[in-house]
Length: 505
Image 1 (cartoon, rainbow, N blue to C red):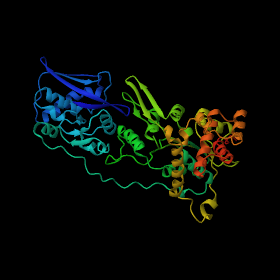
Image 2 (cartoon, rainbow, N blue to C red):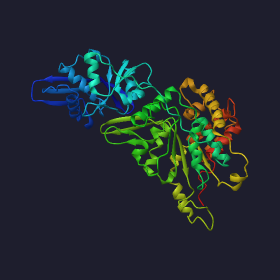
Image 3 (tube, rainbow, N blue to C red):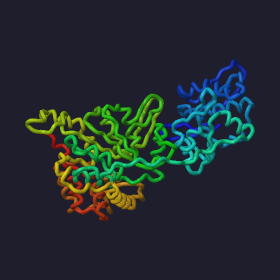
Image 4 (cartoon, one colour):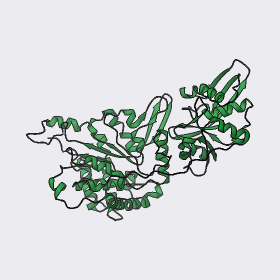
């Protein structure tokens, strides 16, 4: 029988073999199974007997090929049962030739859903398999993959009846997707013209953002509305994101592809494993991978554990997470927009003689939890001022709605994609710095003079130099220019060095 094993979100075709021989009745599993797979012997036996089939009282050897690939989970149960019944002469397995079989068995013979069916079916298709049998609860999820015929079963008895006498398998349920949830609107944000501009530029170029300011200034509101400015995911990105959510068991109801950029906002008590991924055996994706092609928001960022924050440095550069465990190495994509929000000091009271009592040293230590190397990877760093009464009451009309800003962002992203698509870069933030410093994309010396002066004085790193260049291209795309001007470079520099660390007393 054919099945699929997952390593991260990468699927590998697995052949399930069963052999019956003389000897004491026993079931031996081989092929690097994990604990859940080793326990399949008991699940499969009970499911076979309770489905009305005869259990062969012989020595049974089940092997999973390739034997060098670690096997995880319970998705092999149904394939093991079919191979075992075929080896016993109970089933003619010709009807299942070239068919991938996935599903966990309950003791009563029911077929239970499993995680990761979407990337499993994709892997089967890439291996040249065009038919799959999956649990009924996973059928809608598997059916979104074009080019493969998906059938479903809810019991082992239905699969046996299909093989033995041509009984009917189930079709995936009709797709009646629930309505999309309402997105938060940027028009709800009072004032904060600088913050709105920064979020718009970040959305246009896929840039990371750090916002510093007192409580109530609108940092969280701006971060939560960033997804409403991003365009829907294309087919390739939607499949990547949906595969990750399938592995984590977080796909939307009905198994639909994830079309909206995901938004992850872990609590500041999140552990290192929760943030970047981990766990015993097969490492699970963390928040940074679940936010792939979307937004990862760290509110009250200085309250996060230092080890967890520092672990984000490599994913922000490479766009992937590589997790090494004793059971093997797992890689997950992690191309995210990081948004960081922080108060000016631990007490977060208004600063002044009668309010904030934090010393300058306490303030520096508090914001110092966001290390220099981490902040150096964040393109936009701005300081938000408190909202005034005029912002709340005097303004007669609300701010610009998300729909209008999203239209400009979509045009800017289309311009960037047209410019970089030949090299498979989607947004300006993904373009390597050396590419922007070489013809034909190198800017004239007069336009980069403010940057070169900062670089020579040591107030801007080489990484920061490249990130300001990327920001300037995003600003130019928003304003409809084919190349940045010196004004774009200066605005990008202001967004990069806009007072993010001025809370030092």
